[in-house]
Amino acid sequence: MERPGLLNKDFLIDTIANFFIYIVFYLLLVIIAPYAMDTLHATPSEAGLASSIFIVGSLIARIFTGRLIERVGRGKILFIGLIFFLLTTLLYFGVTSLAFLYFVRILHGIGFGISATSAQTFIADIVPKERRGEGIGYFIAFSSTIASAIGPLAGMYLNQRGHFNMIIVICFLVIAISGIAMLFLKIPEVNVSREQLADMRKFKLGNFFEIKAFPISGISLFVGICYASIVSFIDPFARQSGLAAAGNFFFAVYAIFLLLSRPAAGKLFDQRGENSVMYPCFILFAIGLSIISLAHQSAVLLLAAAFVGCGFGTFLSSAQTIAVKVALPHRTGVATSTFYSILEGGMGIGPYFLGLLVPSIGYRGLYICMALVVLACIVPYFFLYGKSPEKADLHS
Image (cartoon, rainbow, N blue to C red; front, side, top):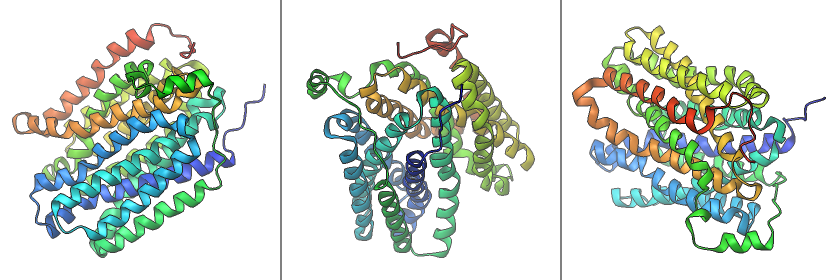
Protein backbone atom coordinates (compact mmCIF):
# COMPACT_ATOMS: atom_id res chain seq x y z
CA MET A 1 0.00 0.00 0.00
CA GLU A 2 1.39 3.39 -1.06
CA ARG A 3 2.25 5.71 1.80
CA PRO A 4 0.44 9.10 1.86
CA GLY A 5 2.48 12.13 0.77
CA LEU A 6 4.15 14.33 3.35
CA LEU A 7 5.90 17.30 1.75
CA ASN A 8 2.88 19.22 0.43
CA LYS A 9 2.46 23.00 0.05
CA ASP A 10 0.90 23.55 3.46
CA PHE A 11 3.58 21.50 5.21
CA LEU A 12 6.35 23.55 3.58
CA ILE A 13 4.67 26.90 4.31
CA ASP A 14 4.06 26.07 7.97
CA THR A 15 7.63 24.81 8.36
CA ILE A 16 9.15 27.91 6.75
CA ALA A 17 6.95 30.28 8.78
CA ASN A 18 7.81 28.51 12.05
CA PHE A 19 11.49 28.68 11.09
CA PHE A 20 11.32 32.47 10.79
CA ILE A 21 9.40 32.76 14.08
CA TYR A 22 12.15 30.83 15.89
CA ILE A 23 14.96 32.68 14.10
CA VAL A 24 13.80 35.89 15.80
CA PHE A 25 13.57 34.13 19.17
CA TYR A 26 17.10 32.69 19.03
CA LEU A 27 18.66 35.75 17.39
CA LEU A 28 17.45 38.10 20.13
CA LEU A 29 18.20 35.54 22.85
CA VAL A 30 21.95 35.93 22.35
CA ILE A 31 22.11 39.72 21.93
CA ILE A 32 19.69 41.00 24.60
CA ALA A 33 22.02 40.31 27.55
CA PRO A 34 25.04 42.06 25.96
CA TYR A 35 22.79 44.95 24.92
CA ALA A 36 21.41 45.30 28.46
CA MET A 37 24.92 45.36 29.96
CA ASP A 38 26.53 47.63 27.37
CA THR A 39 23.71 50.11 26.81
CA LEU A 40 21.60 49.99 29.98
CA HIS A 41 24.48 49.20 32.35
CA ALA A 42 22.76 46.10 33.74
CA THR A 43 24.56 43.62 35.96
CA PRO A 44 25.11 40.12 34.52
CA SER A 45 22.19 38.74 36.56
CA GLU A 46 19.88 41.58 35.44
CA ALA A 47 20.96 41.05 31.84
CA GLY A 48 20.29 37.34 32.14
CA LEU A 49 16.80 38.08 33.41
CA ALA A 50 16.20 40.41 30.46
CA SER A 51 17.01 37.49 28.16
CA SER A 52 15.06 34.74 29.97
CA ILE A 53 11.97 36.76 31.00
CA PHE A 54 10.84 36.33 27.39
CA ILE A 55 9.92 32.76 28.38
CA VAL A 56 7.45 34.11 30.97
CA GLY A 57 5.47 35.83 28.23
CA SER A 58 5.68 32.73 26.05
CA LEU A 59 4.34 30.50 28.84
CA ILE A 60 1.41 32.85 29.50
CA ALA A 61 0.55 32.89 25.82
CA ARG A 62 0.82 29.12 25.34
CA ILE A 63 -1.51 28.38 28.27
CA PHE A 64 -4.28 30.63 26.93
CA THR A 65 -3.69 29.97 23.22
CA GLY A 66 -4.31 26.25 23.63
CA ARG A 67 -7.71 27.05 25.12
CA LEU A 68 -8.70 29.67 22.54
CA ILE A 69 -7.34 28.21 19.33
CA GLU A 70 -10.43 26.10 18.55
CA ARG A 71 -12.95 28.50 20.14
CA VAL A 72 -11.86 31.64 18.29
CA GLY A 73 -10.65 29.92 15.15
CA ARG A 74 -7.21 28.73 14.17
CA GLY A 75 -6.69 31.29 11.44
CA LYS A 76 -7.73 34.22 13.63
CA ILE A 77 -5.52 33.19 16.53
CA LEU A 78 -2.54 32.71 14.21
CA PHE A 79 -2.76 36.16 12.68
CA ILE A 80 -3.53 37.84 16.01
CA GLY A 81 -0.32 36.28 17.31
CA LEU A 82 1.77 37.25 14.29
CA ILE A 83 0.50 40.85 14.28
CA PHE A 84 1.14 41.15 18.03
CA PHE A 85 4.60 39.61 17.59
CA LEU A 86 5.31 42.07 14.77
CA LEU A 87 4.07 45.19 16.57
CA THR A 88 5.79 44.44 19.87
CA THR A 89 9.07 44.15 17.96
CA LEU A 90 8.82 47.89 17.32
CA LEU A 91 8.75 48.57 21.06
CA TYR A 92 12.47 47.77 21.25
CA PHE A 93 13.12 51.13 19.56
CA GLY A 94 11.70 52.88 22.64
CA VAL A 95 13.75 51.04 25.27
CA THR A 96 15.57 53.51 27.53
CA SER A 97 15.51 51.63 30.84
CA LEU A 98 15.94 48.10 32.11
CA ALA A 99 12.39 48.03 33.50
CA PHE A 100 10.92 48.90 30.10
CA LEU A 101 13.11 46.26 28.44
CA TYR A 102 11.65 43.65 30.83
CA PHE A 103 8.15 44.83 29.87
CA VAL A 104 8.90 44.64 26.15
CA ARG A 105 10.45 41.18 26.47
CA ILE A 106 7.34 39.83 28.21
CA LEU A 107 5.04 41.29 25.54
CA HIS A 108 7.28 40.00 22.77
CA GLY A 109 7.25 36.57 24.40
CA ILE A 110 3.45 36.59 24.36
CA GLY A 111 3.47 37.26 20.61
CA PHE A 112 5.99 34.50 20.08
CA GLY A 113 4.01 32.04 22.22
CA ILE A 114 0.75 32.61 20.32
CA SER A 115 2.45 32.38 16.91
CA ALA A 116 4.57 29.32 17.68
CA THR A 117 1.73 27.41 19.38
CA SER A 118 -0.53 28.01 16.37
CA ALA A 119 2.07 26.85 13.85
CA GLN A 120 2.95 23.79 15.94
CA THR A 121 -0.74 22.87 16.33
CA PHE A 122 -1.46 23.01 12.61
CA ILE A 123 1.29 20.57 11.68
CA ALA A 124 -0.35 17.72 13.59
CA ASP A 125 -3.36 17.99 11.26
CA ILE A 126 -1.46 18.83 8.07
CA VAL A 127 0.58 15.61 8.06
CA PRO A 128 -1.15 12.26 7.43
CA LYS A 129 -1.98 10.41 10.64
CA GLU A 130 0.00 7.36 9.44
CA ARG A 131 3.14 9.52 9.19
CA ARG A 132 2.57 11.85 12.14
CA GLY A 133 5.76 10.93 14.00
CA GLU A 134 7.85 11.35 10.86
CA GLY A 135 6.05 14.54 9.83
CA ILE A 136 6.33 16.32 13.18
CA GLY A 137 9.96 15.24 13.36
CA TYR A 138 10.74 16.83 9.99
CA PHE A 139 8.77 19.95 10.95
CA ILE A 140 10.74 20.50 14.17
CA ALA A 141 14.06 19.59 12.56
CA PHE A 142 13.70 21.94 9.59
CA SER A 143 12.16 24.83 11.54
CA SER A 144 13.01 25.28 15.22
CA THR A 145 16.10 23.04 15.20
CA ILE A 146 17.82 24.72 12.25
CA ALA A 147 16.80 28.07 13.73
CA SER A 148 18.51 27.09 17.00
CA ALA A 149 21.79 26.82 15.08
CA ILE A 150 21.43 29.71 12.61
CA GLY A 151 19.75 32.19 14.97
CA PRO A 152 22.53 32.42 17.59
CA LEU A 153 25.23 32.53 14.89
CA ALA A 154 23.37 35.31 13.04
CA GLY A 155 22.80 37.18 16.29
CA MET A 156 26.47 37.11 17.27
CA TYR A 157 27.54 38.14 13.74
CA LEU A 158 25.10 41.06 13.56
CA ASN A 159 25.86 42.16 17.11
CA GLN A 160 29.54 42.48 16.26
CA ARG A 161 28.98 44.35 13.01
CA GLY A 162 25.72 46.27 13.32
CA HIS A 163 23.69 48.56 15.53
CA PHE A 164 20.95 47.18 17.81
CA ASN A 165 18.26 49.12 15.94
CA MET A 166 19.39 47.56 12.65
CA ILE A 167 18.97 44.11 14.19
CA ILE A 168 15.43 45.01 15.31
CA VAL A 169 14.58 46.09 11.75
CA ILE A 170 15.82 42.73 10.48
CA CYS A 171 13.68 40.92 13.07
CA PHE A 172 10.65 42.97 12.02
CA LEU A 173 11.16 42.02 8.38
CA VAL A 174 11.65 38.34 9.23
CA ILE A 175 8.37 38.22 11.18
CA ALA A 176 6.62 40.04 8.33
CA ILE A 177 7.89 37.38 5.89
CA SER A 178 6.49 34.69 8.18
CA GLY A 179 3.10 36.43 8.20
CA ILE A 180 3.07 36.78 4.41
CA ALA A 181 3.93 33.08 4.02
CA MET A 182 1.04 32.13 6.33
CA LEU A 183 -1.41 33.96 4.03
CA PHE A 184 -0.90 31.12 1.55
CA LEU A 185 -1.45 28.39 4.14
CA LYS A 186 -4.71 26.45 4.05
CA ILE A 187 -5.30 26.37 7.79
CA PRO A 188 -6.92 23.09 8.90
CA GLU A 189 -10.02 23.75 11.01
CA VAL A 190 -11.43 21.02 13.25
CA ASN A 191 -15.17 20.46 13.49
CA VAL A 192 -16.18 21.20 17.07
CA SER A 193 -19.66 20.23 18.22
CA ARG A 194 -21.90 22.66 20.08
CA GLU A 195 -21.49 20.61 23.26
CA GLN A 196 -17.70 20.58 22.94
CA LEU A 197 -17.65 24.34 22.30
CA ALA A 198 -19.81 24.99 25.36
CA ASP A 199 -17.52 22.82 27.47
CA MET A 200 -14.45 24.69 26.17
CA ARG A 201 -15.92 27.99 27.37
CA LYS A 202 -15.95 26.80 30.97
CA PHE A 203 -13.22 28.10 33.25
CA LYS A 204 -11.61 24.87 34.39
CA LEU A 205 -8.16 23.33 34.44
CA GLY A 206 -8.94 20.99 31.55
CA ASN A 207 -9.55 23.92 29.22
CA PHE A 208 -6.09 25.33 29.84
CA PHE A 209 -4.16 22.07 29.95
CA GLU A 210 -4.57 18.65 28.35
CA ILE A 211 -4.48 16.38 31.38
CA LYS A 212 -3.69 13.34 29.22
CA ALA A 213 -0.53 15.09 28.00
CA PHE A 214 0.77 15.69 31.55
CA PRO A 215 2.74 12.41 31.89
CA ILE A 216 4.93 12.85 28.79
CA SER A 217 5.15 16.59 29.47
CA GLY A 218 6.33 15.90 33.03
CA ILE A 219 9.10 13.66 31.71
CA SER A 220 9.95 16.37 29.17
CA LEU A 221 10.22 18.90 32.01
CA PHE A 222 13.23 17.07 33.46
CA VAL A 223 14.75 16.33 30.06
CA GLY A 224 14.34 20.03 29.23
CA ILE A 225 16.15 21.03 32.43
CA CYS A 226 19.01 18.77 31.38
CA TYR A 227 19.14 20.43 27.97
CA ALA A 228 19.09 23.84 29.67
CA SER A 229 22.43 22.90 31.25
CA ILE A 230 23.87 22.84 27.73
CA VAL A 231 22.19 26.00 26.45
CA SER A 232 23.19 28.01 29.51
CA PHE A 233 26.61 26.66 30.40
CA ILE A 234 28.26 25.09 27.34
CA ASP A 235 29.90 28.42 26.45
CA PRO A 236 31.50 29.13 29.87
CA PHE A 237 32.41 25.43 30.18
CA ALA A 238 34.11 25.48 26.76
CA ARG A 239 36.02 28.67 27.57
CA GLN A 240 37.09 27.37 30.97
CA SER A 241 38.29 24.14 29.35
CA GLY A 242 40.17 25.89 26.55
CA LEU A 243 37.64 24.67 23.97
CA ALA A 244 36.07 28.00 23.01
CA ALA A 245 36.47 27.42 19.25
CA ALA A 246 34.68 24.06 19.45
CA GLY A 247 32.02 25.61 21.68
CA ASN A 248 31.14 28.05 18.90
CA PHE A 249 30.29 25.13 16.61
CA PHE A 250 28.53 22.95 19.20
CA PHE A 251 24.97 23.81 18.14
CA ALA A 252 25.81 23.63 14.44
CA VAL A 253 27.01 20.03 14.88
CA TYR A 254 23.96 19.37 17.08
CA ALA A 255 21.63 20.53 14.29
CA ILE A 256 23.45 18.57 11.58
CA PHE A 257 23.20 15.26 13.43
CA LEU A 258 19.59 15.87 14.38
CA LEU A 259 18.77 16.34 10.69
CA LEU A 260 20.70 13.21 9.77
CA SER A 261 18.88 11.13 12.39
CA ARG A 262 15.37 12.41 11.63
CA PRO A 263 14.44 10.28 8.56
CA ALA A 264 15.18 6.97 10.26
CA ALA A 265 13.75 8.01 13.64
CA GLY A 266 10.50 9.33 12.19
CA LYS A 267 9.85 6.21 10.12
CA LEU A 268 10.74 3.98 13.04
CA PHE A 269 8.30 5.86 15.30
CA ASP A 270 5.40 5.42 12.86
CA GLN A 271 6.15 1.83 11.86
CA ARG A 272 7.31 0.26 15.15
CA GLY A 273 5.94 2.60 17.80
CA GLU A 274 7.25 5.23 20.17
CA ASN A 275 9.27 2.82 22.33
CA SER A 276 11.61 2.01 19.44
CA VAL A 277 12.66 5.68 19.38
CA MET A 278 12.23 6.95 22.94
CA TYR A 279 14.54 4.48 24.71
CA PRO A 280 17.47 5.20 22.34
CA CYS A 281 16.80 8.94 22.77
CA PHE A 282 17.27 8.76 26.53
CA ILE A 283 20.44 6.69 26.19
CA LEU A 284 22.02 8.81 23.44
CA PHE A 285 21.28 12.05 25.27
CA ALA A 286 22.80 10.67 28.49
CA ILE A 287 25.90 9.55 26.57
CA GLY A 288 26.23 13.03 25.07
CA LEU A 289 26.05 14.70 28.49
CA SER A 290 28.60 12.24 29.86
CA ILE A 291 31.00 12.94 26.99
CA ILE A 292 30.74 16.69 27.68
CA SER A 293 31.87 16.07 31.25
CA LEU A 294 34.93 14.21 29.95
CA ALA A 295 35.80 16.56 27.07
CA HIS A 296 39.35 17.95 27.05
CA GLN A 297 39.75 18.09 23.25
CA SER A 298 37.66 19.91 20.65
CA ALA A 299 36.85 16.70 18.77
CA VAL A 300 35.42 15.12 21.93
CA LEU A 301 33.17 18.13 22.63
CA LEU A 302 31.85 18.05 19.07
CA LEU A 303 31.31 14.29 19.37
CA ALA A 304 29.12 15.06 22.39
CA ALA A 305 27.15 17.52 20.24
CA ALA A 306 26.45 14.71 17.77
CA PHE A 307 25.07 12.45 20.51
CA VAL A 308 22.97 15.29 21.95
CA GLY A 309 21.54 16.01 18.50
CA CYS A 310 20.53 12.39 17.97
CA GLY A 311 19.26 12.11 21.56
CA PHE A 312 17.55 15.28 22.75
CA GLY A 313 16.69 16.54 19.27
CA THR A 314 14.85 13.36 18.38
CA PHE A 315 13.29 13.13 21.86
CA LEU A 316 11.68 16.55 21.41
CA SER A 317 9.71 15.72 18.27
CA SER A 318 8.82 12.22 19.47
CA ALA A 319 7.54 13.45 22.84
CA GLN A 320 5.41 16.12 21.14
CA THR A 321 3.92 13.43 18.90
CA ILE A 322 2.96 11.37 21.97
CA ALA A 323 1.37 14.46 23.57
CA VAL A 324 -0.74 15.05 20.45
CA LYS A 325 -1.71 11.37 20.06
CA VAL A 326 -3.33 11.20 23.49
CA ALA A 327 -5.62 14.19 22.80
CA LEU A 328 -8.95 14.29 21.00
CA PRO A 329 -8.81 15.99 17.56
CA HIS A 330 -10.37 19.24 18.80
CA ARG A 331 -7.88 19.42 21.68
CA THR A 332 -4.60 19.15 19.76
CA GLY A 333 -4.04 22.85 20.38
CA VAL A 334 -4.41 22.40 24.14
CA ALA A 335 -2.12 19.35 24.05
CA THR A 336 0.53 21.25 22.09
CA SER A 337 0.42 24.24 24.43
CA THR A 338 0.55 21.94 27.48
CA PHE A 339 3.61 20.14 26.18
CA TYR A 340 5.57 23.26 25.27
CA SER A 341 4.50 25.20 28.39
CA ILE A 342 5.91 22.51 30.67
CA LEU A 343 8.99 21.82 28.51
CA GLU A 344 9.90 25.52 28.18
CA GLY A 345 9.10 26.04 31.85
CA GLY A 346 11.85 23.56 32.67
CA MET A 347 14.25 25.19 30.24
CA GLY A 348 13.39 28.58 31.72
CA ILE A 349 13.80 27.80 35.43
CA GLY A 350 16.53 25.20 34.96
CA PRO A 351 19.49 27.58 34.51
CA TYR A 352 18.81 29.34 37.82
CA PHE A 353 18.77 26.16 39.93
CA LEU A 354 21.56 24.50 37.97
CA GLY A 355 23.66 27.61 38.43
CA LEU A 356 23.44 27.09 42.18
CA LEU A 357 25.12 23.69 41.77
CA VAL A 358 28.07 24.85 39.66
CA PRO A 359 30.12 26.43 42.48
CA SER A 360 30.10 23.18 44.46
CA ILE A 361 30.35 20.49 41.77
CA GLY A 362 31.71 22.38 38.75
CA TYR A 363 30.59 22.13 35.15
CA ARG A 364 31.86 18.60 34.68
CA GLY A 365 30.04 17.41 37.78
CA LEU A 366 26.90 19.17 36.57
CA TYR A 367 26.90 17.31 33.26
CA ILE A 368 27.42 13.96 34.98
CA CYS A 369 24.42 14.71 37.21
CA MET A 370 22.32 15.68 34.19
CA ALA A 371 23.24 12.40 32.46
CA LEU A 372 21.98 10.51 35.50
CA VAL A 373 18.72 12.52 35.50
CA VAL A 374 18.11 11.63 31.85
CA LEU A 375 18.68 7.94 32.56
CA ALA A 376 16.33 8.17 35.56
CA CYS A 377 13.60 9.45 33.23
CA ILE A 378 13.50 6.01 31.61
CA VAL A 379 11.81 4.63 34.74
CA PRO A 380 8.63 6.78 34.67
CA TYR A 381 8.51 6.48 30.88
CA PHE A 382 8.56 2.69 31.15
CA PHE A 383 5.65 2.59 33.60
CA LEU A 384 3.61 5.21 31.73
CA TYR A 385 4.18 4.24 28.09
CA GLY A 386 6.82 1.59 27.69
CA LYS A 387 5.37 -1.61 29.11
CA SER A 388 4.10 -2.82 25.75
CA PRO A 389 6.72 -3.19 23.01
CA GLU A 390 4.02 -2.99 20.36
CA LYS A 391 2.91 0.20 18.64
CA ALA A 392 -0.03 1.53 20.60
CA ASP A 393 -2.79 3.95 19.66
CA LEU A 394 -2.53 6.25 22.64
CA HIS A 395 -5.62 8.12 21.56
CA SER A 396 -7.92 5.17 22.16
